[in-house]
Amino acid sequence: MSILIDILGAMVIGSMLILMMFSFQYQLSDTTNSAIYMAGMVEHMRTASTRLNGIVALAGIGFLPENTVVVADTNRLEFKTKWDYAGNTISTVENRLVLTLSNVDTPLGKALIVTQNGTQLNDLGYIFWVDRLFFRYYDIDDAITTDPSLVRSADLWLTFRHNAPTLGRQSLHTKLQMRCYFMNAYLAGG
Image (cartoon, rainbow, N blue to C red):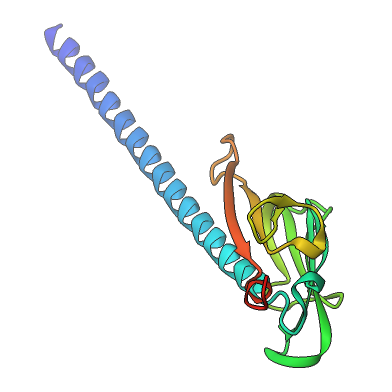
């Protein structure tokens, strides 16, 4: 009888060890997926912020500061420049660059769309996983303004949303805030 109890005890302990190993393997896999997921999202946000800051830095090339910004809305920025982003050259014609959020929700979230003269830019056409876009504009003295002729810098808030790597988990929401300066307007005398 004691042998049966020993065998039964060994089976219970063995099954608990096997269950612990499966649980550990699942947790390790889940942690790895989360780390890869976070690293990819952080890289996406870094790339998006670098590209957006580069686009805004082109504002006002060849224009007076008061004629640089055309639309200064809370969810849309439109400005003039003589820099042809698509051709990567300075031109003699006016180019209008627009940053706006798409109204269409896709499996990759909403897209931040960057266009030049109504044409989507090839390498910046879409920045995905954006849930919200918000602009706040400032004049030369860092006072908040809504007058496009006074805009010299803008706070850009982006909220990124990405589905979790594991089913049943909440999606990741990450907020990014950056200040973009219209340097050409500053350099032209403010």
